[in-house]
Length: 265
Image (cartoon, rainbow, N blue to C red; front, side):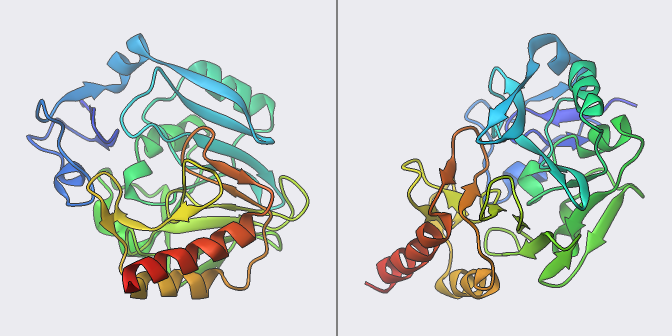
């Protein structure tokens, strides 16, 4: 079976469709040159996986940049070794490196734009479960028994690790809270809901980032309420270098107020 990967969003499909519903949605876009596709094998010929420390955890991303250019993070927690986010490419070298560190016990993904080649990653580690929020079920392009849908506003994986449905960007947009790590004070792994700003002192709340559509005030207030009980010093954003290291809780709180005040002006 030929499985194609959209070159704009990085999502893998079980065939070669005529269009990419993920990119045609108003939160994403079709590139100026129209819909284009690649395959996992073709991507291997042009790209490698960059693996390096990302503010105290192992980051993994494509080199050169590809599609949305998210990076995944390897989190060795008391809930097991979690791969946070997925990528369009899996390589033997990356799998060997992660197995040497103890392997991957589960994959958790923040939202549909980062589903990428999630089944390739799951299969590479013995069909480990992929945790997705059920509100985003319809965006799964390759259904599989490896995918475990969770529901509600929180999904506790251990005493220290909780998945939190922030919503706003997608109904099931998820953040991961790690109470004990990777540094003292804990961390929020937010994907892009909220998204760490380029100044690394604020976060932003957008329904569509590329199309500049701000998140509605009610969605932002809902996220504010769901995150209210969680302490964290650090916030890890969606891609390389987009992290707030130290003062993360205060930065998020101030950003909630800034966004709501701007929309009310």
